[in-house]
Amino acid sequence: MKDAKRVVVKIGTGVLTRDVGKLDVGRMKELCAQIARLLKSGKEVALVSSGAVGLGMGRLGLKSRPKQISTVQKCAAVGQGILIDTWSKLFEEHGITTAQLLLTKDDVDIKHRHDAMNALLDEILKDKIVPVINENDSVSASELNIKFGDNDVLSSLVATLIKADCLVILSTASGLLDMTGDGSMIKRVEKIDAKINAMASGTTSATAVGGMITKLRAAKIATDFGCGVYIASGSRENVLDEIFADKNPGTFFVPSKKKSSSKKRWLAYFGKTAGKLHIDEGAENAVRNKGSSLLVAGVKDIEGNFKAGDLVEVISKKTKSIMARGLAYISSEEMRPLIGKNLDCCDKKKHIAIHRDNLSMR
Image (cartoon, rainbow, N blue to C red; front, side, top):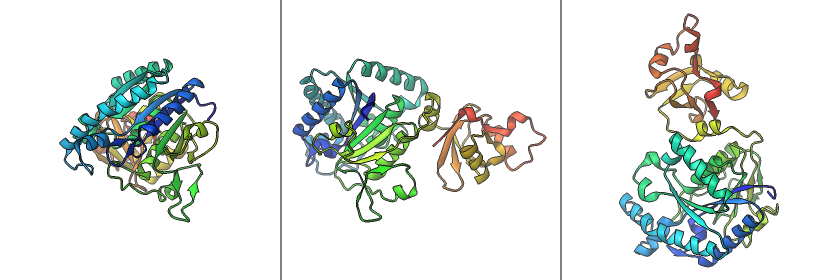
């Protein structure tokens, strides 16, 4: 990690606050000093900061996360100003300029906005400005289709967007604990599989969302595209210094050796999908292990209506989950009548559901 050039640091609400809605300014000062040292060493750092809703709850006298969406939006609107003002003043002590970015999923899903955000972040980071990024909860709280779901996932998508070398998730958890065994710390994870996922649990915090389950999801997204991930305790003294001195104070998730193109990254995790293709095990094997195009012969069912060129999800028969995403080669109207048919007499172009050049694994 000494050689990491571009870094995303995600800090959870539990690290930034004491009780409900009270900022732990002392801890924030320590983290600012560590980030300042990273910048001085030549790294570029993007900060994904939770806390807006929790701070709003504190200012408004609420003791638990509200269930009414409009109240969540109100808390976010009140808390975000407090959050960014505090970060800005603390970084200013080190001569560092901050930039506030509040994102909804549309900002990275819609291609021209995705490209514009990528260019903006690239310019900000190269100028040694620290972008302080949060989900725009005042807007996205009421719209499921434009939410990231939580800031762990947001941080992994930011890391993927800017092609970061490392994502550090700082929370109240010291790392991944083996909850299926003796409860010991797992120091290194080579691959996130069913066994690793079984070790996760949710959260009982009054202000947080997700817990270890979402952190593993975030780690999977980032590592799939060549970004190493640390999960460590944000309350640990000099935790960032330790990580970038190649000490491991938490759990390290090993990145994939194969770095995908920007196009493949966008196909896998960005963009709104228009339908689903349910495929059989033979097709899954061909796509996953042989790098083949997805053929119509392997498609067993179609959900939704889409045009050629629309983004669609590929659903595994075995796991019932998304295994890939890609651009439909032909429309759902053309594809449906071909399901289960002998395609020998068809136009060869209609044999393809998604061409391998436009297909990305999840």
